[in-house]
Image (cartoon, rainbow, N blue to C red):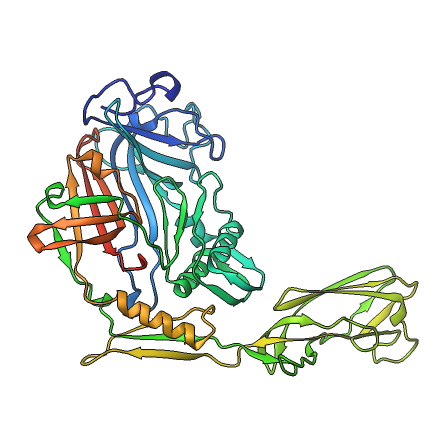
Length: 494
């Protein structure tokens, strides 16, 4: 079997066989130490392989917002006649580390002196025995970075005038996206007036909210890197792909789900509370609804979420918390007995949508907190409204965008018009390649390309939105690659 070789990279780097277009495969798995590859090439055990990455559609079902890419998946079978990958085999050199959660990456070199390409990078999600057949095998499934973003819940603080790119970077950091894979986050086109705090939401859901605000594009690259491109990205196509490079069975299709002639964009308006913007008057936005007793030299800590008129609120500014006005302490729970307010130290920290109180009793006697509140002024969202742009002349087909970061009608209308411009009745090609390795592995997700397909009179700019690959032979020398594209709209690639 032609692989990178059977030794470690330092001894037989990229194998000893193959010239010209011979494919030399390399499979790294960090079994022992997280993210650390030893150089051992496990491609020598591979007998089959297939992978899929990217998104297959731009809009969600029934036009419900912009879709994120699906979780990318790589699946391969390993010859296990010597028991190397048997999780119960204590004689295996990998025992007891044969388990999901390990980093893996698949590469291919086109000829001994050719270019090496990344194919897939991710984390093993399953290792299963393959039943039947003459020789024992295991099937390994690897998932890309979207799996991490789906599984990891994050919490983020409120921020004013936060760009979409800063928000994206904060999301990836909070989700602990692997540093070894890295990120490439372009500076976004728009600022979010009030980036409301996130409370225990999956990172991917927050990214979806952000993409449905910015209308940019995201992907996990073949080397694991997370990529964010802004809406108005302008770039020259990196490659030209002609009909002669493709197999004959070229598909050109129109996605009925993607044909939209009306756009409805929800708007989360922000209203000022606490006087006026010119003359703000701090008002109570949170108060303690219990009367706890705090012992001598004890610290009492409590969090409170702001509300105004029974709606969640954001405090742009909080008034200084002062004794008697904002807090009182007494020996009796009903407010009677000796006044012990003076022996307490109260610290309030504003987090935009909530406050953290630290109340310390420095006195020698216990006392009850009979009043604890915070005053401020800022913004709240009383109701959600929407902006609709309707270009329909016959059957109305609406795309609906819902993101908490769309907070003005003007911005919503701008995005509605943009969305209708890129969800028309475009013809989208889907094509395959075989026996052209220099091209099959050269392209990655979000690469902008010129497609020239004379059969359908197509010569236009697209970007790669979905990639599939499959070994057609047990030694990996015949590979079928499938590419799907989306229209690279003028002024942007969303």
